[in-house]
Amino acid sequence: MCKKLNIGIVGAGKIVWDIHLPLLTCLDNVKIKYIADVRDIKEIAKSYKAVAIKVDDDPSILPDCDIVLLATPVGVREPYIQEFGKREIPIFSEKPFAANLEAHKKFLKLTNRVTCNYMKIYYSSVRQMKEIISSGIFGQLRKIVICQYNSLRRTGKPKDHYQTNPTLSGGGILIEKGCHTLSQLMHILGDCDFVIREAYGVWLHELDFHIQTVFDVINNDRIVRVEFTISYLKPSNTFSKFIFDTAEVMFNHASPDALRIKPRSNSKGDGFLIAPNKRWATTQYQAFYLKWKDFIDKICTEKPIDTTSETSIKTTELITEIYKKAEREER
Image (tube, rainbow, N blue to C red; front, side, top):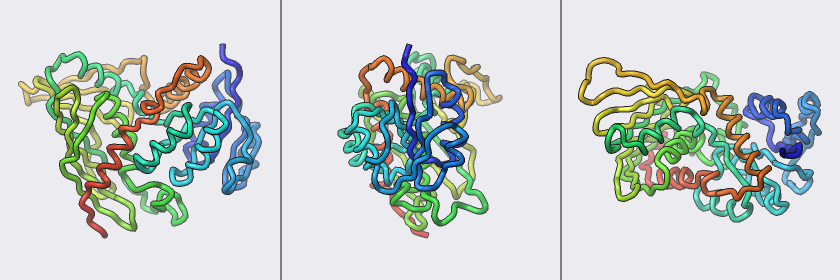
């Protein structure tokens, strides 16, 4: 049985208040030790019986803890990873882990106990999709098509929001929203390499609002073509479609969803559904829970942590290469 873990939290944005704090306070072996932010959050921290700390540019003032949740914008993350890595305190980082591959590799040199909150890989649909590929039940995987549309609220983001600042956010829709989707793809396909064939994007004020790309995934000498589009600008359905020899398997990757199977020999009808596997997440909150549980278990049992996998370095590499390759349209 693991001792009671004191959790430090750095960064007190919406994701922390909406999900992390309510979830962590429900875990028996967890106590929120402190919440640190650039704003004054005394009243909110008090409601969780935690110490409120106002931080600026000096992470050394933050107390020790058993695990630190790092929920700062990616552009100001390095000093905190360096500080907590030096103290050998395990780091649970919000996504995306790093703005580019160079920064990602640098961060992993600073700590050997870190994970990134790519919790959507715990969705039942993602786990079942991986099993379908490995089983070969529908033959060889031939092609993957991924589309994702994220609507912008009518009011948009305030000018001082970190997501409107490319230095703080690391980029626009591809890194902010697409990192989850590409982490799911990397988890499903396993150890692979990729080659970007073409990429195009629309930028506004140094932030990408639309990205479409074609790349080849190379796995065990097999090549699978991937067509990926993500956009704030062009409404479409959100889905991932995996095309095999004998069937197409489709699901909504943005939220927990059932897999829809459609035989390729019969173009009529909607196909059939595969019921979710309840070992895995069928809600967003379950996915957050499973991600936290997995990391806490590894810390409690002192198991070696594969930081390249935990932080999905392949996701960062793919995003970096798409940005490099993209033909930019400025608006």
